[in-house]
Every structure is written in C-alpha cells, then in structure tokens.
Length: 117
Image 1 (cartoon, rainbow, N blue to C red):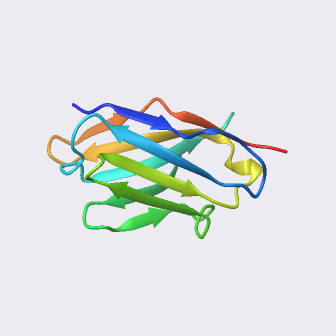
Image 2 (cartoon, rainbow, N blue to C red):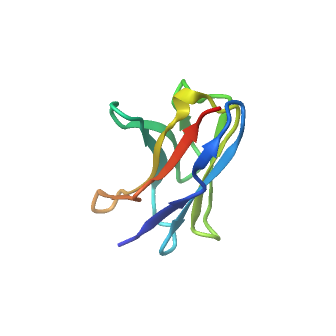
C-alpha cells in the first residue's frame, strides 16, 4: 500500500509558474511508473506527464516545453514544475503510481490549479 498526497496547487495568473509535489507514504523505489493527471471541469481526466523507472518521460502535447516532471526517490516525492501557465491548464491535478507486480494503481486526492487573471 502507498498513500499519495499532492500539494502546491493554487491560484496563479496566466504566464505564471507553480510546482506541484506528490509525497508518498513509503519508498517509491519499487514504483514502476509515476505520473500526473488532470481533470478540468466538464472534461475527462487526461495524462499530463509520466516518468518510468529508468528515466523515460512522456508529456501531453499540450504541456511539452512548459511542464517538467521529476521524481526524487530519496524524498519519496514526485514533482511537476509548471511554467507559462495558461487558463486552459486549470484543473484538478492528481498523482498516480503504478506497480507492475500485481498491476496495482494508486491515486492521490488531487490539488486544484486555477489559472486566471
């Protein structure tokens, strides 16, 4: 079992930056894939970025060049650095962890990011 707790959301003006954190309740060394998803009002949840053990990273086309995902295994934490934020980035951002053995998926409760002037 692992609990995931996101933090760092809030209100930011267009063009601004935020860094989201996802703290895990135990070591993330054995977690094969970690990622950030978001769900905007009235829309389906979508993958924002993911990072696989070994370092392979994927980004949604809409955030490439603006967002950076990283994981710090020593701190059991996943990050999402978001720059040049746009109003269309407004959503609840949730952390996801996938463990290949047992094919178990864990979710955090999410943190709200609002981009507005």
